[in-house]
Image (spheres, rainbow, N blue to C red):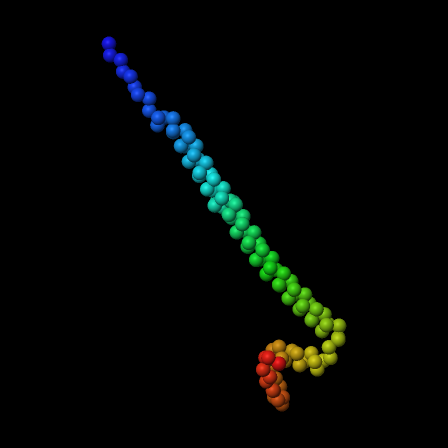
Length: 106
């Protein structure tokens, strides 16, 4: 009668820990780099900060423009000053006017 003795291999013991390690590595990678991961959150927060800065500048500019419009609406400017500012903003002059250009540093 022949008996076979099989040598026990160590590879069988390593299969479950290897698969578990691969799953943990996969999910760990996607937890950091995935669409909703930690790195994406950091990028989203920086984009939010940039957008908030742009919003703050636009709100300040809008307040300034609203203030200037309020000054015009209340009649605090005289008509000739309003005419002068409108022509300067539109870069328009009348036929009989003399224009003297002054440098931007003054």
